Image (cartoon, rainbow, N blue to C red):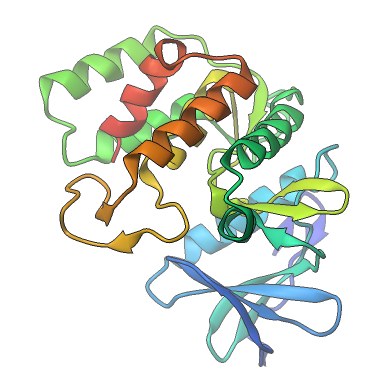
Length: 263
């Protein structure tokens, strides 16, 4: 299979990964030789989403911001995976656990966010990437609340808005930021799209508010997030992040509501 003139590898060649480095909801990361890692997706994760993430990674590979560099697709004994160049450093989750420095973490997230959003693209020339509004509309139409009057109104409102032409990460959670000696680096290519920076800021804020911070324990007490959260810390982290981005909760409110409606 070819992608923008690049020959994709044969995924039928089965290989064995090395030591497990991290574990996530949909994928685990393993060593892959001395200078690479492989992100292996769980069997329940749709193969078309694995392909889409790899295509996204290729689409942004040459753009001027720090990110994990894709090498190839592979089939291993544990499932399909994407091989990336190995980076030296630590995950932002590990940084927070080690230092407790929420302000510093928020500043690094904001630095990375700005470096991504300042890149402008023509959606017609980067066909591999969806627009942010296409992503939002699809999520809302397919959500369990799609037939509600509130969601239908938001879908109509989205149709009146002009999309942007900035690169958006679309999934910039603390688990998808890696701290290197050269600064913060973006991990995961699943959410890249083209739109307004305000959408990307709202999505990152949502992930800060609803993604557990290091040390939080699983519980059924939180109907929205499934976690027993120190909401004080989350709110503090969110405030630091929005301040660093120069935005307010009111400014991101419209996009945040549409993101939540698409759950």
